[in-house]
Image (tube, rainbow, N blue to C red; front, side):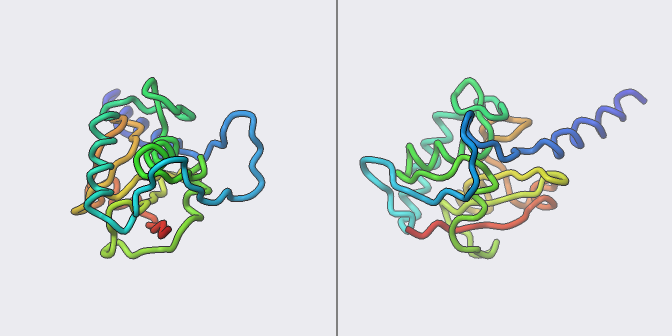
Length: 171
């Protein structure tokens, strides 16, 4: 009996927490920040083969880094922080820190039209939101609260039911 309770409580707790929108420490944000370019080389998001290469590189450098809400390093990172770090270091694009503001960027794109570099969003609870970066063939890169930095499938049970929307950052 005790085991069955944990199987209900743990997913519910994770779903409620998700990857909430946390602004950077000490900063009060009153409007959605836009997209800017990081200094140095910028990857053209239209070049999907190069974007995929950069995303797999990021995965190999960060895989299994544990999830930590508000985290921004290999000691622990949350979903929106991981997306922000990935876009800045691998694609030369500076995104807002929070899932809330990342979800306001770009143009909506249908699930069947996804390409490497598109942001995919999930509703993980009443107010919880989660974000990842689409790679290819139904897979996306993200910082999971259960597995840390990992690649998951959009059609896996949990992610399929939590899917919310996708955005393309044409630049």
